[in-house]
Length: 461
Image 1: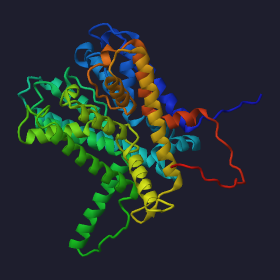
Image 2: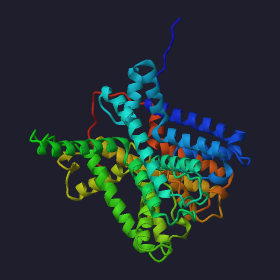
Image 3: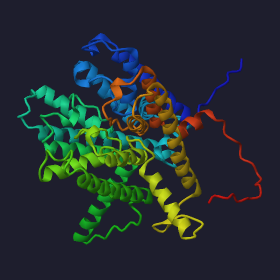
Image 4: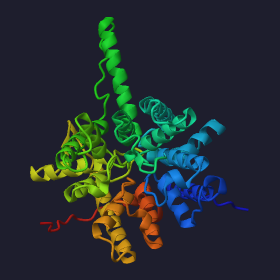
């Protein structure tokens, strides 16, 4: 008897792992001990998808609708979805069997952005340690910032700190408070607001970048110690790789610009209840949370129209690659800008920091941008069919938030019809696994050919 073995490509494994986790989460959230009030299957599916895809859009109040066990299930779904269930499965296989197959290493390597097979599980182990380390430090920071004046007993303060640290680092935006960070007990707790902002910024940088930055800090420390002890300078060029440099610079520039725009535009509006440093902290958190964190320190429905449009742009850009965040990613927008500038200067290639960017990266960047806008456009059209009387701005905001796995809302998610909720579920899922991964999973690859056709130029402008 001949046994035929089928190999699934990494995209199929990646998508399947998230689908299985969403289905498991839906069933767990329907259990009686997880609920304080009944929950429909569509709302359970929506909540599970939002947690696994680290989006944060909610159709029921997490604080009042779920028991402690229900909130714990949501926290675990966020953690599993943030790191990626495929990474967990690969690590468990590695530790239980003492190694892994070549196919498993290829699958994980595709999503961990490593070239050598020996580096795949080294990076994944670092990913786990970095995640746990930052989340624990973040939880301590949140616990410290809460103090003893919030009225929560010790056990609830510990769970509150862990839940919000995991939700922050995974850029999920879920909160155990009904009004999120707008709750009266924390709205003026600027140390808490700032700590949570720092946690989700770290989560949005991406694991390879965080590891690379830690390597750079270690390198700088060794150089300083080596210089003091006269043991050499430990000079190593390119410790901070070009991927990290581009994403860090892009993240910094976007954060600075967004903070200034919101601070100036909303100074006398949503920032008016705050004074002094409080305005700056809330402006900073409001500027960084659209880049897929989803925590609301202000009422986004009360923003100026121009600010809402700007927030939609920030949501579309999103976080850095290989991170817990969504969006088209900072590297994509950076490559698009650099490519446009190269074309304007008459160059036939894109160069930055003494390196030439590969043509494949440029193609992926523009493909990602096109597919994201196409998916969001289809979603807006579909929801408009189910919600004919709903303002277009509200629908567009929800779709951008869902695709970029942000979780911000103008306060209308819960009032959507069942059809609209199903559309948002699909959009959240596609936004998490990316439309490009969906196409790769189901479109058969073309075999390489040993010929090339003659090139032709098309009229573009």
